[in-house]
Length: 93
Image (cartoon, rainbow, N blue to C red; front, side, top):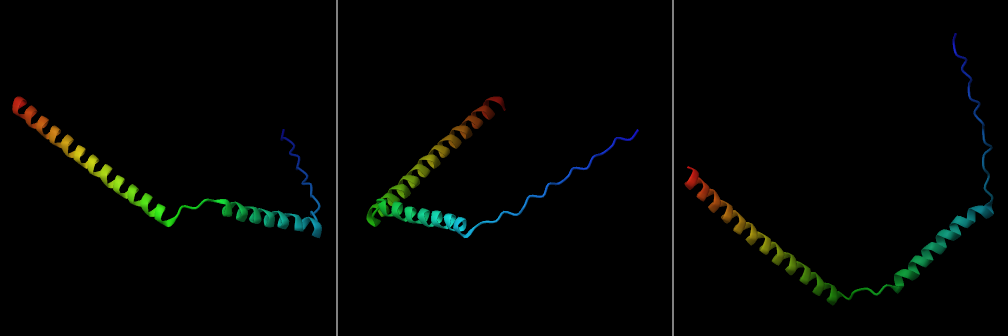
């Protein structure tokens, strides 16, 4: 009562041969791509050094100020919770 197992025939595909003409097409496409990328990079309006320094200073100062505000708010919340704990301890014992 054994089931008959059929083996699958593996079809061998013949090797693909590429002609010299077909090999140059990807190379031409890659060269065209690199040329187009260079052209696009030259069209970019780059930020000047002075402008970049100004924007960097603005970001650093703003980050510092926001950090100080968050720190002060944290101190206020800690003080409020400590006083609330003191009041609850005084009332409840």
